[in-house]
Figure (tube, rainbow, N blue to C red):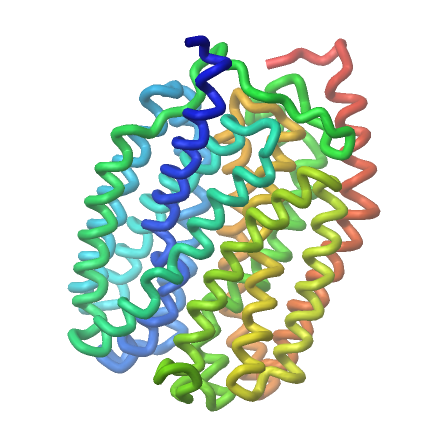
Amino acid sequence: MSGAATAPTNRWVQLWLGVLCMVLIANLQYAWTLFVDPMHQAHGWSIAEIQVAFSIFIATETWLTPIEGYLVDHLGPARGPRLMIMFGGILVGIAWIINAYATSVDVLYIGAAISGIGAGAIYATCVGNAVKWFPDKRGLAVGLTAAGFGAGAALTVVPIRLVIGSYGYAAAFFWFGVLQGAILLLVAQVMRGPAVGTVLPALTRTEVPQSTRSYTSMEVLRSPVFWLLYVMFVLVSASGLMATAQLAPIAKDYGLSNTAILFGATTLSVALVVDNVMNGLARPFFGAVSDRIGREYTMAIAFTLGALSYWLLSVAGHSPWAFVLCAALIFFTWGEIFSLFPSTCTDLFGTKYATANAMLLYTAKGTSAFLVPFANVLVAVTGGWAAVFLVAAATNVLVVVLALFVLRPIRERHHRLLESPGLRAS
């Protein structure tokens, strides 16, 4: 049977394996907020000190992904995905065991750095695989993959909180770290990318033009449209990461975190589960929409809704169910950056070096992580969260303007100029 005939079946297997890998690293980020107060109570570390570990995790999870993506691309489709996911699985397991035994914030920071490197290796590999296997459904495929990372923590939020409540946060770190690492090692053995010469369905929609050339990372870094995408990514990611890292403190300040609202579950527990589900659903939903109407128009719709969501949480989110609903809207309207931006990047710069190039853009998440602590500074200065939500809403509106009136014309010029025969193809 030819490669062209088998590719559509095999690629879906690879996609769902990638989703599973993302699920297994999701709570490294999205369940972090559950560990913050227990560590604060156990060791007396300040919330700000603990949240530095979160920033370190985000930074190492993102800024090293271009290197990890480069290795995946250059090791080849048979070895690259398998070896990189094995590497990541070992690191995330070790890191959470370190977190379990950390008796100082410095050791906690070491664990955060190691877990970030491991998670980044897995994230880079799975996103790279998705954009390569699915040129015809790139937004949907990357969205489903990223959904594993966004929604995967919903499967473990309640179990982790129960383990923390019954056995302490250290036990939760230890056992979830061991379990996740072991499963990743097993899944890694069957991961691969599309072999050279594999025939895959092409996307023919004029709303989503795709490059017929593959650009090296150095060429990408010289392109103005890449840096525009980078700035837009930072602006939306910073507001979304603030919500991710600060959801528990926000609920506490609103007096809602321990209010039981559903079968004995507290407002915070319900919100965390719903938020992770909504964050995950946003990625394939908006990714699929972008495959049909174009990336910029989808960005405009999503980020306009995002701005409204932050405003609603500020003015109407002070009762339990209103808090859950408003927070869910926020998570639904920022998670799609992890499907829209990698898809746009690969549309622009081709598939041969897609893993490395998409991860160059993904480093914007690491840059944005260091803006998260400023939310606490703004709260301290103003005495509440309203100013934080106003800034978050304003940044989303700014990105809408950039998508429609700057990105779209620059992208069109990019395709005209960089696709010209006079420029060397990679």
